[in-house]
Image 1 (tube, rainbow, N blue to C red):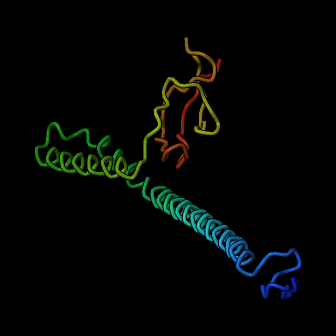
Image 2: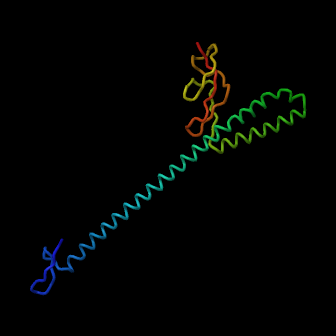
Image 3: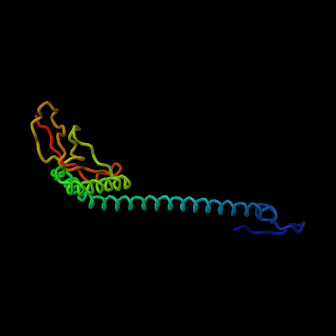
Length: 174
């Protein structure tokens, strides 16, 4: 702690010989620098907090969206099966109208998936990858490379780079 003394001229000085007028600006400047440093640190901490909460909110949204989409995918599978099973639509006009309605619903379904960022995996002709495909059957290669996907039994989906559901496939075996 600095002590102040009064010299012969009547001026008050500190231990280093500085007058109170000379010492005050340096103390104020030091205090200002400390406050400015604290302000900058607080602003940086707040910016980091904001970025972290934004990232956590996006991750939670992506997790909830992926979970919901995973639960809804069987509905699209049923629409595909309904369209594929209606072979008598050519001979029956009422059934043809019903089939057209199901096709319209299927288009809306695909548009909904697209808006949610969900993409179907294109797998036929691709090499088998256990991270993206679920092999449920093998079949003779018949001119195809070993491990190539020959048929898709259930469509696989991804959202961004994250797998929602693996494609169920048939694979060529030499």
